Image 1 (cartoon, helix red, strand yellow):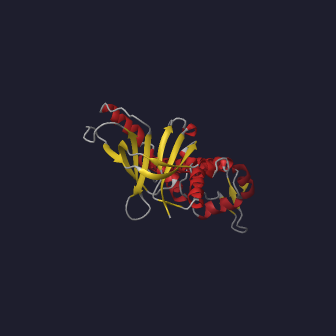
Image 2 (image 1 turned 180 degrees about the vertical axis):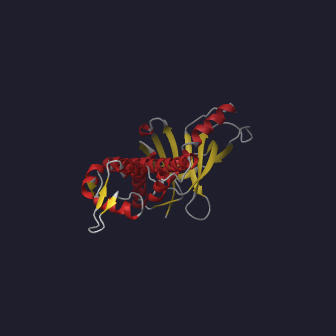
Image 3 (image 1 turned 120 degrees about the vertical axis):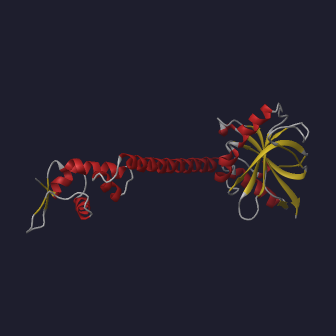
Length: 274
């Protein structure tokens, strides 16, 4: 037999962890000296210890591990438990991947800070434009909330336009408006068209009104990195005595969903004099 220290070394765990497993009834020592209280283990107990560790690594609680090892679960219950854990881990991986992408975008944004200045901002009048659009609601105007909502809308919009034999006549345009109380916004994903509002199709035809004055800036790169460009626009608006009137329109001059980092987008913020 092995002392607790020897068994811990063989099982690549700590003696403290073995004492805990003993305390919760998960892995009892083969023998406990009645006089000293020393714990002793047999070699065959390494199999149970290894199963405990493997099931813990899957994310099961100690109670669930005990139920599996003591055959208190049938095969269907075990499959259900493992499927649930798989879904939890997949969600966690997706969330971590999104966070990593956000960090990388922030790093790229910091690296490009200062390349654009307020001299790149152009004040101009924006003519009215007719668009075909689909809409959805995002929890907020923040980039991590907008991206997952707007990105699926465009492939679906272009699929519907093709089905209705409506050909875009200009760039895609996104615009936003409050969804009511709170931070939620309505996301409008549109494509410039030249058809009448009565054109048949499972999309909406709307006329975006002209903007008498808009502070505009051409943003190069992914929209995940748009904050730096928005900061430049904000500085220009403040320094020149204008007032921002609502959310920016986004005119996608060059965009590929496969290579968003090569995108070219004109940001248009409606402004008025203070």
